[in-house]
Image (tube, rainbow, N blue to C red; front, side, top):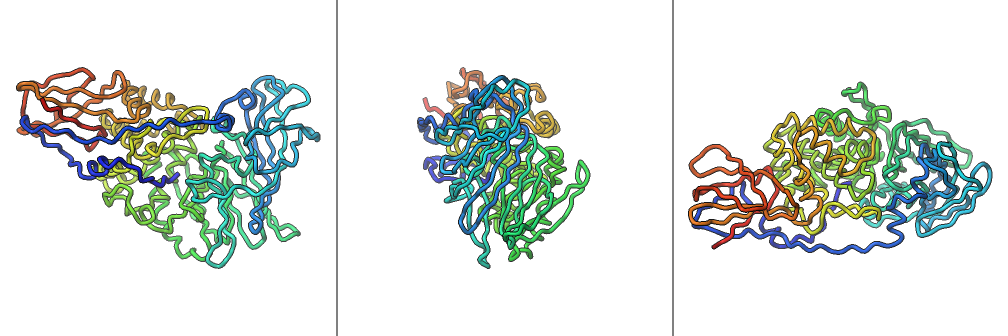
Amino acid sequence: MAYKDKIYHHSACILMRPTLRKYLFISHFICFILPTSAQIVAQKQFSRADSLSGQQSPERTAYDIKYYHLDIRIDPAERYISGQNLFRFTATRDFSRLQFDLFENMHIDKVLFKNRELPFIREFNAVFIDFPEAIKKGSQEEFTVVYSGKPREAISPPWDGGFIFKEDLSGNPWVAVAVQGLGASVWWPNKDQQLDEVDSMMISVEVPDSLVEISNGQFRGAKSLSDGYTRYEWFVSYPINNYNVTVNIGDYIHIKDSYFGEKGKLALDYYLLRENQRNVDHFYENVPQMLTCFEDWLGPYPFYRDGYKLIEAPYLGMEHQSAIAYGNQYKNGYLGNDNSGTGYGQSWDFIIIHESAHEWFGNNITAKDIADSWIHESFTTYAEAIFVECHEGKKAATAYIKGLRNRIHNKLPMLGHYGVNDSGPPDIYYKGANLLQTIRTVINDDKKWRDILQGLNRKFYLQTVTTQDIISYINKVANKDLTPIFNAYLHHASIPKLVFKLEKENWEYRWDVDEKGFNLPVKIMFEDENDWTTIHPHQNWQSMETNKKFVIDTDDMYFDISFQQF
């Protein structure tokens, strides 16, 4: 998801980081302390509703979801949904009760199992159904939830989730949905957690005849009904996480294209409002460049069978699998701006690049718990720099990543709380990208780094993962124990600080960091030399037998620096 940066930076950070020079010139007689951001860690409070939404309870883990058929009608004028969803599952153990999810404002008309209505109880947004006899481990069963209601509407999508009901310039209904973080059960009944992705899915949506509906996956056809509605059918042939399931309704025109990539011919389908069809050249320009770069760096596009769709949406954007929502007004940058402040972000369309990168990190590789959302957003924000590197070179990409530091808050750890539907703070974007740039620098082998990015998408193809899965894989391929470095940035609010002091005629240095065993190497260059020297600070004081001036490379690694005066 494209993050809307909130302005609550500590004033010292705002003043310091944009003006920080590449090289920090230091002499033995000039000592000072660089300001750091305030560390204010708020204690979050979680409720029973949060636990029901986020936990892996026995009522959820008892069944492995295999297939959905979401079959609904959407009335844009009334802002109303009615229909049903079929759940087909395999029992992972013997059980008689399970949980599915649907927001409490939506009405459940009935739950059907083998032509019988099942009793159910509701607690907040969780729904519990009891079967008349035990479901045996390994058995395959199905039930159907019939429901209706007016779904919650988003106030500021995609950051405030829900349905979006708007009109185009001609007054036609323009409808979409964005629910990441909030939960897909805001509008359709499902097993609303990321650990268990459905294997495949049919999406059937009925909309007024004058409108077009686009969802994920392969288009299976449209049928005009006898009551002024048309039924659109879409089939998702790959596993998909719930928040990626989407509907898009409007007066769309469809433009077909194709891309010949690493797995052959990939169907490209562009859906623009009729009034904006002249802007399709913007898609022609950006999408093939994106695919060429990302297939080279991240591996093949993960969903060749289902194709790649770019759909104009009444909000900024969202990474819906094979059906990217696009609302960047056909501008380069982020609504015309550059998040990095370097200028490198204004030659490409941020939403096309960022949201499409989620097809690799977020849709192909999905975090089991949204507490690990850094896996989605850090790698995807880093992919923006990869795109810069593809077109402007490595030096420009490094500058782009460094430029994002002025958006880092360092107020909370990047990892959210597990089991309570907590995705962590905004730093999972910009701080996470700088963490990955730091890791790349420590590995110091660009071929191996590219192998790691591609390898992650092969190793965890169409899988759900944990933070430990990602770190362990990178450690293995890099042949380095990078765990303390990852932990320092993921588990702690403050970033590591490299502290120097002058003792007699020698510089002494150490890491001031909350993570035990932190071992990030740092490059410095002395005043009369032309090559970098690598030092290996630890948390205990070490000494350099010199008092000469030196510079510190802060371009490629993200940390603070402090000089103590004695």
